[in-house]
Amino acid sequence: MKLLENKTIVVTGGSRGIGKSIVLKLAENGANVIFTYLSSSEKANMVIEEAQKYGVSIEAFKSDASNYEDCQKLIANILSKHVSIDVLVNNAGVTKDNLLLRMSEQDFNSVLSVNMNSVFNMTKAVQKSMLKSRNGCIINLSSVVGLKGNAGQANYAASKSAIIGFSKSVALELGSRNIRCNVIAPGYIETEMTQKLDNKTADLWKQSIPLKRAGVGDDVANLIVFLSSEMASYITGQVISVCGGLST
Ligand code: NAP
Image 1 (cartoon, rainbow, N blue to C red):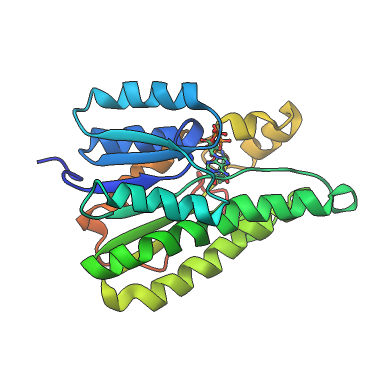
Image 2: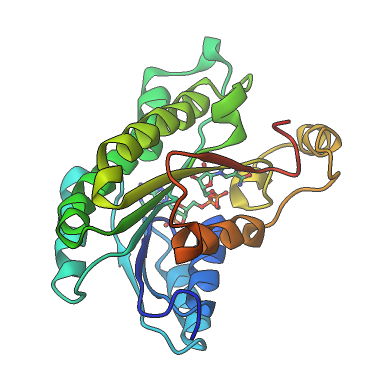
């Protein structure tokens, strides 16, 4: 029997990057996966095709994680077809980097809305069903930047720190109902998000990583598999870095 067989797992932002690796790794380990995306339907279809080789059920929905109503509708739709949602992975995220001097109010608010409000929206939406089944696992994607800040990313760092406070509170509030909530803080992972960095900044990041290389999506996805499984049933309220030692 595969590690995640018979589990239903929802992942936000699964069409590319780390989210894509998460969807494929979960499917490989036997989970039925439902993932969302915002605009890249073609990429989402390619992920579905690739994941289907594992013989599990895979679905994708275009759904804006920063929109409360969208999240409510999405989860209601999923629960009309699946008995329960075992795991929620809040992965969707964006950057709009700038020095504070040049950062607009809109760029501050929109990053907070996609990165942080999405975690609230989705957690609120699955909470009742998880409470009913007295079982649940929520995994939220923060960043090492949420732990230590980063010049030029005040909006992003604020959103990623907020996720940590939110997740620890959820772990405290829902632990007695067997609902776990943990945070993953990736370091520098090669995806479209980090491709936006200029070569000089990327090289500087890599040099400061003790393992002297950037991470890949699977480095994060492997931890998601573990946290989603019964092997992690006594782990909650924790922030685990996947960063090649960068946050040390
Ligand atoms: P990415 O390559 O830019 O992919 C982002 C994913 O999120 C895409 O699937 C995108 O869908 C989806 N998305 C964006 N806005 C959304 C919204 N409002 N509703 C639903 N889906 C939305 O990003 P990534 O590098 O894989 O990052 C994934 C997560 O890890 C993020 O939370 C990020 O902050 C975190 N993280 C990444 C790194 C890194 O080095 N890459 C480091 C630390 C933390 P579309 O394709 O449709 O736009």
